[in-house]
Figure (cartoon, rainbow, N blue to C red):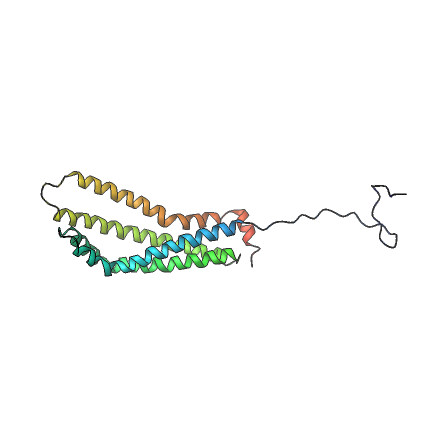
Length: 202
């Protein structure tokens, strides 16, 4: 006769076994993969931009020689004036780009030290962005003044307004481009659920 469905399971020696509970399997979080990919993309693009920034002083004379009006030569002179801080900012930017790629690798491998390294990167990148934006703003302002001095007589006065608008747009774009990733990392790793997840990393 079949056992009653509510009857407790029996062991081989006839003793009743305790009821079993369903086992819930917690799947690993998938956000580290997406965040690490973002780090790789932003870090790679940052490395390319910084690399061309390091090359700029060596190729800008060639472009200036192609302009017979002298406008490019005037802007190149301004860039040479600030070549040391520009090269320094590009070199720091290259190092920070590599740092971000390392952070992405640690996040992908779920290493606990990815959290303090991402925080250190974020603060360093924000400081670097402020320095770079300030230097670029000064260079662009002086470059426009130098261009005005080499423009032909009768050039439209509205060019000054366009230059001012372009300067503001450039600052806004630079803030978004250089500060988005560090701010995202700071906010993401400050979330309680993410802190609980990273606490179990190796």
